[in-house]
Image (cartoon, rainbow, N blue to C red; front, side):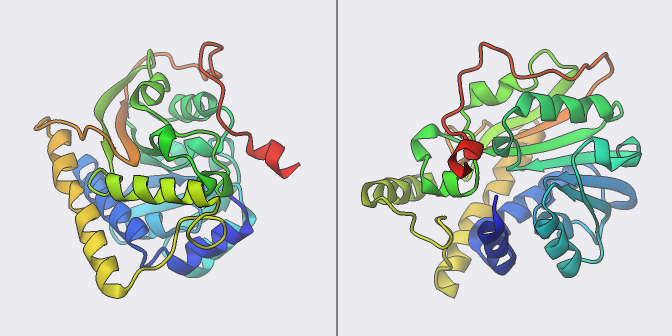
Amino acid sequence: MRSPQFQLHAEIEDLHWWFVARREIMRRMVEQIVPPSKDATVVDVGCGTGANLAALAESYNCVGIDTSPEAVRLAQQRFPAARFICGRAPDDLGDVLEQTRLVLLMDVLEHVPDDFELLSSLMAAAPVGTNFLITVPADLSLWSEHDESFGHYRRYDMARFRQLWRQLPVTTLLASPFNARLYPLIRAVRLKNRLRGKASGEAGTDFQMPSPLVNRMITRCFAGEAVRLGNLLRRRGKPYRRGVSLMAILRRDAGVLVPRTKPAYVLPDVHEPAASLA
């Protein structure tokens, strides 16, 4: 992400339906995994401008880390109840991971060239029993200028997503698409934007504020998926068939875990953000 996208996040993430509903789903999943306690540390890797972590700060000891000085500065200004670090995880977290109960990776892995290395490095540094809540954008047919503006290397299908932790000592507590109810609408918007050759929102993204009434309605629709996802975490019901995003909740088990790089058999990414900036 670049400065215009960070600024846009800081301006709209307190109100826009996508951010608000996703935080509500995240918060309810976190409370099922780790009971609220200020003795429980939650680390948000790739915390951006900090709103996800701030939603947990009253109930948990919260630490965010991001490589962007601008994002960390904005997070520190807006959410002083949480601690924010400018650096790379896991190296710049110091001993924080040793006390961590949960690691958030919310729409982070698509921003790095080697997602296998980042996830396995974090898991290798985390104690046995640490939980990971991971979200990524789904469905390559939704690829648009929105993805390129945010510096995405890829969108995931479930098979590619599961490759990230296959053969690692982890237990999969949940793996499902989400943002499923709005999938037909978002797919139609992305198709329209591709045909017109331009994103529909600000800063090369599809983010724009609808009217307050529409925003509330869409927020309620999306956030309502927390019920089904919560049931899945309790081993009830079935995953969504498709969605704009994917979610996994994993638990680090005992066993040797050596960081690994992206295997040669994994298909090349659809975009190279670094090349587009050259």
